Amino acid sequence: MTPTSIPANSSHENQNNTVCRYDGNDWLFTVIPVYILIISVLGIILNVFVLMVFWLHKKACTVAEIYLSNLAAADLILVSLLPFWAVYLLERYNWPFGEPPCKLVPFSISMNAYCSIYTLVLVSIDRYLALVHPLTHERMRTPFCAKLACAVVWGVCFLLNVPVLIYREVVHRPEKNVSRCALSYSDQTDKAINILNVILNFIIPILIISFCTLKIIQALTNRLRDSYSTEGKEQKATTLILAVLLAFLICWVPFHVFKILDLLSRNNIVGGCEFRLSWFQQIAIFLPFFNSVLNPILYVCVGKNFRKKVKEVFSQMSNRRKSTFSLASTRTNLSRSVKTEDATS
Image (cartoon, rainbow, N blue to C red):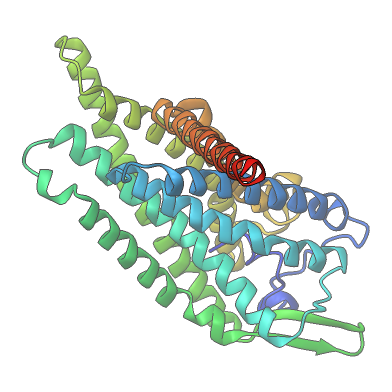
């Protein structure tokens, strides 16, 4: 389930089990839209920068870089659509964009949130194979397999979010003079889909990532203890990946914890209000968006190979400018020489 699921006022908002309401003057409608717009601008700039570095560099991307470029692409699409939700909150849950955007925007945000998470699963598996089973699974760690795995992830994430595309619709409420972008299925179906999303979008990925990360740390510890050094590139890539995984956990775990508590409260397993209106929950809902900005910052701050690529790309661009300027100067000199010869003759 993505952060759009709670603020978007789905079909269960009028049920008796959601007696807790947001205050009309709540900071949700003032501070959060500004935060979302800042995240959107920074996310677009930083992720475009990352993709341009990978695209312009003369060398082909490694397996890890293929995954990171797909992660940047998913983050870029996600943050590009966030301004729609900022406007939605500024309008106090009044959707002004019509039916097609009501379907496409939540679908695209949800799909790319899924893609970000499962790309991180691929990244953790790749690091696991590289460090724990470097010889036995070498054939699986090829650029072709990495691209194929990314294509499968995008396809599966598309299919998993088809219900968002189908059931989102604009619901007009004349008595409140608002139009909500809401999910049109029943409350029971909503609960079932939320449970499924928690399993697919949190429990399964977190189990895989946790297992791989523990094995990676164990492998690195054993190699240091045995005075055995891993290959430089692999070790640098692993450091970056571990930082990206840690950022993912910090940004996404609080949201899913509150999501699980919300599901438990709807089923009367735990108390309701305290899990719905707290500031901590509001922060947890919108914190995952920051992950799309944090990832490219980590590439620069932690990724030595990425910083090297950035320098090489700028060096390539500088050399191209110099060669272009030199060629232009040569043509100008030749043109002047020809004109001088014509004048003297």
